[in-house]
Image (cartoon, rainbow, N blue to C red; front, side, top):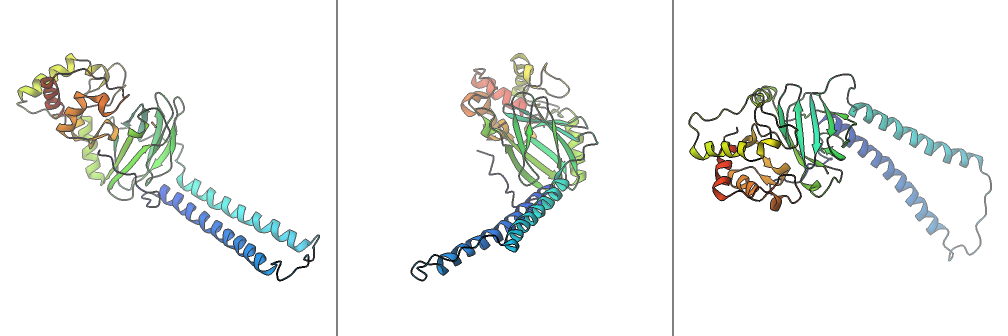
Length: 313
Ligand code: CUA
């Protein structure tokens, strides 16, 4: 299987994730001090007032004003302090509400669609320029999903008819692994997402390339030519977009540059010709319950389709 473990929230790579991780650390520190004080007092009492040492009932104290003021004010100060820290982290991780999104991420059972303001469309793999604060709007077309890339920020629900926004800024080039974090049906676990952060120039080249149809080879192989005919003749085109050709409803990943992606089936397989053939041959065996139907393709049809899809770079 191709999708590795998610990155750790304790290894944050964006200002939002740093704010959240710092808040966690500080809250943990405050709670550790409280825990140590309480445990210390309990142990002191246990040792000091042992029955063997002091058989008598200890002196009972009623109404100690300074003590009561102290145990009211100290917890109040702690709660106010935690509130201030939390409000600061919220301010640092809340998205700006006053501009159009750079990327719209749409949750589907069981894959992610990403639509860029530039017009680029991709699936299960988001490219972003390093160091740029992007506004990402998260939506869903079917059930509630949850978009989560631990190293880049908080979880955000993808609710049908009720979009939410998050800020996303990667502070170093790299690949950040994410997943759907809300149970959304049988293939919830295979709803992974990759965020690939690149230097601005590399990202711009990627973005430009995504907006063009794949540059098909001047002399496509006989297999690839037959595969393209099959792609149009079978029902593939009713769900998948390629280039500017859109299906009636965007119910499956855009395949314009499929061969360039890292994974297939939202993380279930690494993307190489062998795995692609396996996926075409038996999608329900690879990802049971997914909306990719088993078309009972023959061996030559699988080979032809694989050859064609591999040209989509
Ligand atoms: Cu989508 Cu869980």
